[in-house]
Image (cartoon, rainbow, N blue to C red; front, side):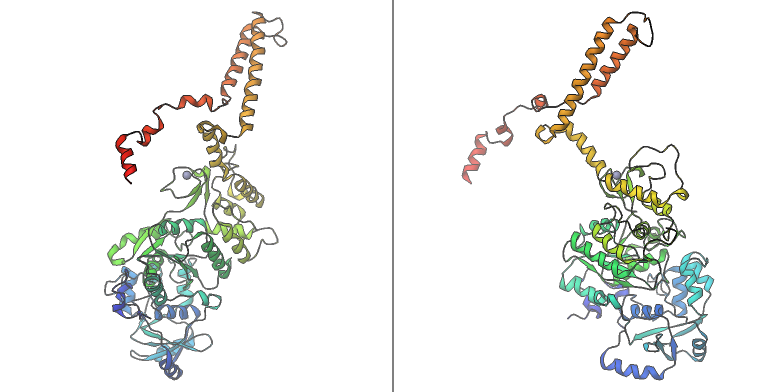
Length: 580
Ligand SMILES: [Zn+2]
């Protein structure tokens, strides 16, 4: 097997790791046995699960070219410029600043050049850090540069103050123990695996990466994937498997719903599913850049970025995860960034679409909100087929946590918020594509019943809108009338016949009507009877005509014989045929 950690190994591939070299700091075999013994004798710092995962990401090359935690020069450069000190793009500081009094004592005893063991919560050595730098840093400074806010409600900001100590240690690491990924161990792929799969095993010429958050696979994702599959050989789908979150669809079920949709709707062998285990400390627009570089380190030539890529709350502009790429030159990033607008389902277009490709308004729209979908699953409702494949929803609904509604019939999000996030027309219109309400509703007054009503309507009618339009067109457009239902022709004929009867009767009435009526309610004068007749005639003209094949002969305007069009009545052409 090819050693992809050798720099030369990449020369024939369409992609290179970020910074040119895939980092490999995983110690194996006999060396590992020896290092484990040595690690027990070194000073030890206890680290939490998030740090353990970061260590594993560094050691397996996910965060190449970083070989460890950043020193002060790289840290400051990354924070203020989004680049390492050598100028290479790197959006997020990799800092190691342990908390706790015990750790603080040990840090105080360390000096540059020392080695220190990093141990997990069971006190097992996970890695050895060689100390290159020890420095203090400012937490507000870090938060404002990284997240653009120092608001503790921002999960990234909160993590800085909650999880990080005052002193940071920088230096390269070596990994002695991998993290057990539990139910995802069987799906786990490291960069060395994907490079091999893409370019040795499958001989891809290109591969697109897609990193996605905590919601079930929906048709907005699929739209982006399928667009990429039109031109790119392979797809690497990496659903984030984040640290414990309380309210979500359990990752196991999310992964299973992915698998069932991939099996059913994606071309075989071109889509690779591998969970990405990350820490939560990177959140914000810069995370998108980090994700693009992670995809690059996994061997992807293209990065697919959705609208609210890994977005959180209302801290950033709607398209902040797109505009951040303006700060960097494409050749510096070294991965082709594909930005996608928010995907919705347009029932008038009868397809998933974005504002880039659909001219219709919200009247016909079903929005694809990941959170809305998750909340609808919590209500026990499979979302409309237009936005989530049933194969995905059926499995995802089994993994919703917490299950169902609380004692008062409430979900995590209020019903109104969920409703508006998916059915944007509902406040203004009772039905999809329907007329305006006399009085618009407010989000606050919407109830679970509204959510059910909207779902019933959309289930019944979403795919009827375009079909009805087609029916109308075909009733006029089909010159082969045997495609038109007879009962429609029969009904139209009956309608016309009945209206003609009304007209005949009214004509007699007009003829008999006096100029001045003796009793304006019992009898009418001629003028009013005449108006009545005109209305009846107008109604007749509004009733569609019954079209028959014979009556449509007039539409054939070009009467040349068939053979003329085939060219088979030309002597030369016939000769050509016989020669073959
Ligand atoms: Zn449309």
